[in-house]
Image 1: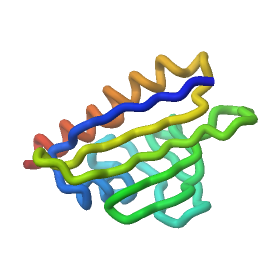
Image 2: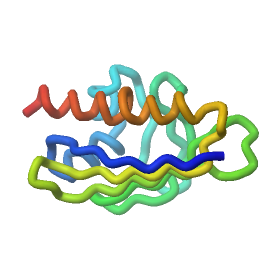
Image 3: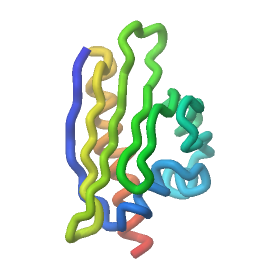
Length: 128
């Protein structure tokens, strides 16, 4: 199991980034795929046509999202914590993803950088 920590700058207010991470309609706008998402702790979520699934653990509006990501029959919980901080260029995003299976690590980290936050950054650059 491996952990991944990274930072991203998204050219939008923390409230807009938070909505893009938690509102299924907004998620569909930037991913191009239907999403199942709720800010209700304990609810299940699904993104990218089921490529990412898990359980929502904790939300702090406009500041933090904590999710459990599912990787098959993995015994150790894989947690994703996303913290949003105001930044002079929009929002500084602090990402910590723990207990990533070794065989999925490269795909997951590339996905965070290119597909997840890369797409989100592009979405807001086009919108602004």
